[in-house]
Length: 446
Image 1 (cartoon, helix red, strand yellow):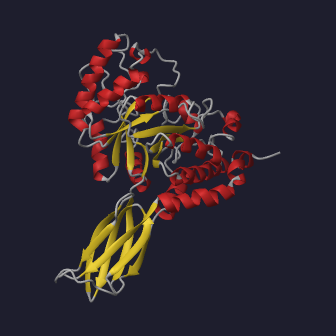
Image 2 (cartoon, rainbow, N blue to C red; image 1 turned 135 degrees about the vertical axis):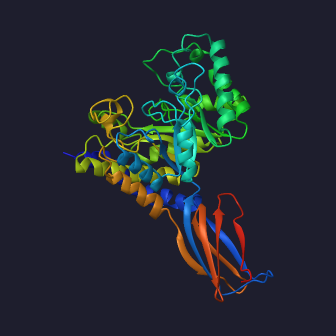
């Protein structure tokens, strides 16, 4: 009888050739580029034989998680650890803009950092302050989401709801359009819900109106569509996938969609986990879905991801870590992918559950990267290894007779030091995908 590990990982094991060829090669081709350097003296004359040292300091690719527990934990020590651990591996943070919690009382939004606390909903200003202090990109989640429409608006007409949404968009644009560069517009329009629905949710122009209004108020912001129902839909690898058709229809109407968001929560009971083997836990299937959506001509993002451990038993935590290693590598390798966002950093603080109740709500899955006591799980160490070590470039080279040098590395920002004839300069360069990536470094006078 196969063990859980053998069963869950069997398709990754069977597809080692695919992983070692297509996936590995795509990382080299699509995630790395060459920086071309020319080193000159103060008069612009090339300097041969100079030593050039380079060290990557950040990724262009976005690795993130939600920031929902910022200063929300029960002890000062945990709050401090949360902030430290988050910035160790992530350069993007998803911020909670759920309308019902951001504006529980009509006309009194909770934008300011001193706002009254609501669990898992830190005030936007507090989140942005943390992001700015730690060079983390904030992302708004989300502008329209019927599951979290305020109770004071829920029973209103579509016309009244549109009026209030317009006010909400205007307020957010005025306050955050210069500090939040990416936003999710619509969220989970294909999902069922046990919550009451508004009239606007059923309006034929729900999606189109939301997107055109967002484009009006956020013309310079990257706008992202987000959906959970995807991988298990009928025909997920064809253009008859419901999510694919929704996006295709909007694009045909010249609606601006900048990126396509795809959730990857494996929210299955442990005894149902085998249902994932042929889909989410099958690398060739995952790639075929990504390939199909890439045909829409927009970058892809994994906007929300949870990989369950189910227990705190060593073997189960090890399986979670190995799954993350495979899945992150697959997503990172795909040419259309631009971001991977994990969901909860710690266990025990997930949605729909009391703190620390590991049998309730989403706590059941133990999908975090930290245990409830904030010790690091193997899953955390895997992401740290991938992002900060395996997908990291540093080294040294030298200039040729023409003062030229180059290095090949992952797209992102680098510290570069040039040493020649007892002189040294330090600078930063930005190795960007799709750019020429040529840099002139001048050794000035003493």
